[in-house]
Amino acid sequence: MAAYIAGRMFTLAHLSDIHLSLPRAPHPTELWSKRLIGYLNILRRRGASHQDWALEALMAALKADRPDHVALTGDLVNLATRDEFVRARAWLESHFTPDRLSLVPGNHDAYVAVPDENGFGLWRAYMRGDGAERKDEPSADWPYLRRRDKIALIGVSTAMVSAPFMGIGRVGPAQLVRLTELLAALGREGCCRVVLIHHPPAPAPTHWHKRLLDDAALAEILAGAGAELVLHGHNHTDTLYFTPGPTHPIPIVGVPSGSAVGMPPKPSAQYHLFRIEATDRGWSIGQTARRLDPETGQVATAYTRNRLSEESV
Figure 1: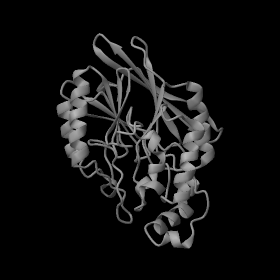
Figure 2: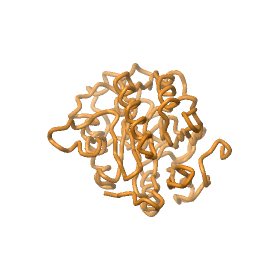
Figure 3: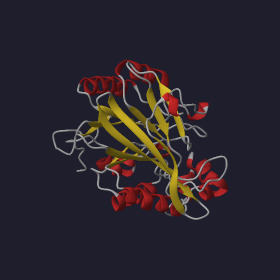
Figure 4: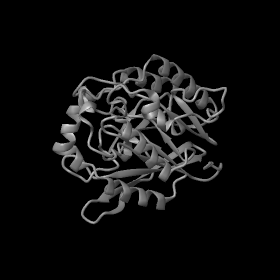
């Protein structure tokens, strides 16, 4: 396990929306659903804008940066076919052990209704809290909690099946209650609380047909209980917003797709490195963006923020 040692910097990498290419063309029987619309979109544009070579170039750079832990905030697949979920599990296992990567699902991972054992339940080892492998505990409990000493990674699921042309998400009442309890308890312990979620919370803007349905409720919880950092995907853009917290504004950071080749208006593939350090004034969090140049296939630093604050925007 990559453990945080008090007194040194903890580095957390964040990538999202990797949209692995289809392992094969869907069988016609798999397309009698919302999948038909998605497949036509892949043939028309999405397939060209997301490329496995771009993702692997990004992964080579990420591994060279040697982060202590990696957060992946959803959308590993496109149409939610069983072959896609199996391929995504193989991809995960080829790059990470479950203790080194924390995963939450996205809307494409719940594109249509799929039995858990054929869907993102295949990735369960990457989506459960510390100790959940014990037989007397559930395999997954949302939101889950992973501790790396004083770094608390909290995985929230917003994945839900939605109608055609929709990509909405929901946290739901049960998760909201447990999230409130977790954030409050971890705050009293002095932990650095990092919330992992696919859909952007407010005030990050999202098209109405892709919105988080209970973003107002989530914002209220963050305002009352607090957090140090919220990481999301979904929009395929590089964004930094702030939402009120009980003692300080909470940064909400979005990252572009991890497999994008930079077809306008979306940027090319990118991941973020967060440098988290305890100081006598609380937690200090800096950010470096690492971006793919599609022309050269090289990944380089796009920018660095020494400290996430409203003045750094």
